[in-house]
Length: 182
Image (cartoon, rainbow, N blue to C red; front, top):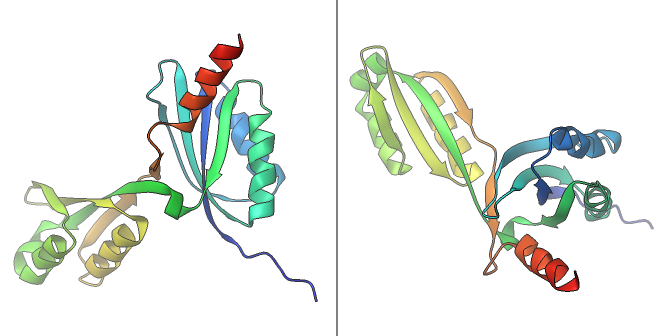
């Protein structure tokens, strides 16, 4: 009997030089393997001149290993690693635009916002902006609870941001080792 490998959410942390076109090269690896990217966040890393890509995708481990190796072969990629949620400290942000009249008419909406430790960042006669940072499940759960009040005008959430649970970024160790070798 052949056991099928289970699919789960993986987070890839990819470090590259700040070069135009590298994002396209990285995402093309997922496209060729027909793996959909769930979220993507790109920003400067803590190392000058190095950018960090935080990519989440549902896959099995065999497939994610192959994707990681293919990405790491790209000339401008410095380092790529994949992780499970337990290996990272993860956060996202959610923004919720609510109808102010409904928020004022129903105190349960404000209680719901407080229960999720979200913050009301702006209130005007038309809309109220609520912001929540945290884990993906909490951000989605707040949306569902607010949506049940029929007060949500707009909703969006950021891509995942993540750091490893280690002392420094793994790319730092790699760069230090590379520097010693040269």
